[in-house]
Image (tube, rainbow, N blue to C red; front, top):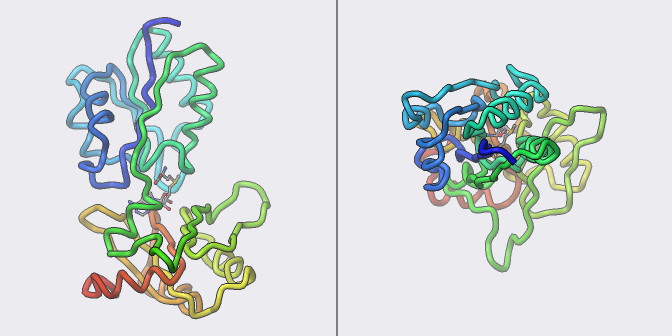
Length: 243
Ligand SMILES: C[S@@+](CC[C@H](N)C(=O)[O-])C[C@H]1O[C@@H](n2cnc3c(N)ncnc32)[C@H](O)[C@@H]1O
């Protein structure tokens, strides 16, 4: 293996201070930064003045650069002996293609390290006082996608709390899938947009009215959709932040 190394870094959900100390250290040291748009731009000011900084993607998993182009750039810089920070929003192994990049680098014999991040799935509900579990009451959580690239059906496993990423565009199908799985139509649910940033917002309701509310409030990505009785705690704790 050459001297080049790629750090696949989770930058956390949006608030730049939620990156790990380890992730921030690497950002300061590396020669090249490749970042996805969900990675907080505030972190780029910590980059070495001489570092090359490249934007790879738009929000909601859509890319400016194709995954194959990103892989090739990582390979090119690493083979030049450079240290590269590959910044990804949230955690790099949660709906983020971090594993594809790791497998690719491995297959090419490139040295790499994965640095964990706080996923939006778990952290953005907390901004509004919504826990994922409660002892003795709600003990199971699933993190799911609201968008599948092929014609595969969406999932709604039998869990107390369901957390969907990328669910805005496909909300009708997401809600239908959850109702078909047996959840009651008055189950509480909420959208959290741009969680942990200065413009974060919550739109809450039930499975019966969330489609209407999301339309009325103009809910847009990036947003986490959380479904379950746990949403009620948010109202009890931070009711003033709710619609
Ligand atoms: C391609 S996935 C990346 C997920 C990321 N790896 C993570 O662990 O949070 C993009 C989706 O994550 C969710 N997301 C990311 N950041 C968010 C934020 N600050 N607020 C709400 N949702 C967010 C949205 O559902 C968005 O469409």
